[in-house]
Length: 158
Image 1 (tube, rainbow, N blue to C red):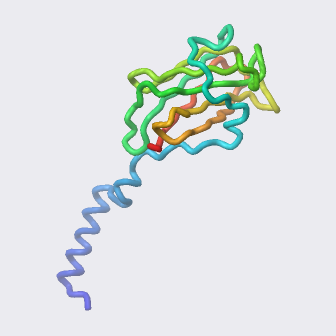
Image 2 (cartoon, rainbow, N blue to C red; image 1 turned 90 degrees about the vertical axis):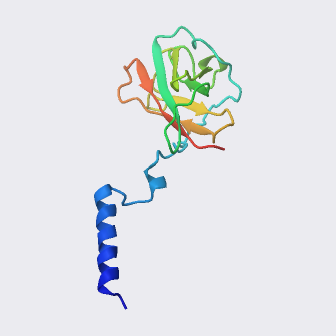
Image 3 (cartoon, rainbow, N blue to C red; image 1 turned 180 degrees about the vertical axis):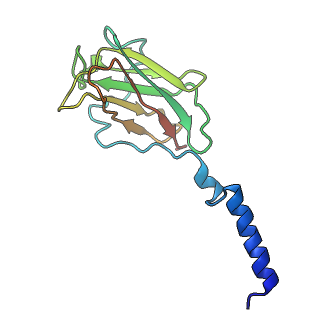
């Protein structure tokens, strides 16, 4: 049987929890990992070289890489990028390259203009270094004439 004292102290604790915003477990409030996207791995080339630029450039692929849970930026992480561009198809080795994140977890790689393939202008990106679970992304451009595309990774330890 529930006493008045137990009821009041339970109700008081519930009010304190609600007022503090702790409605779900603390772990659930952390940054969730990025799931791999369907078709993201199409034409992936393991070990694509780290490059300063893909082709003649003119288009900028950017993004961030953070750790799941606490969102810490991850420096020195390898991101591979490839796409169907004005200079080649996404299956061409010359259309692939990789770059590393800087101290703030940011990556940038200049490449040729992305053009539509199968009706959509899209890029492919992969995190595949091994410290974290592999993630493939396939972001679609809202405007095929845009000259940049951003894709962000939140990685879960392997």
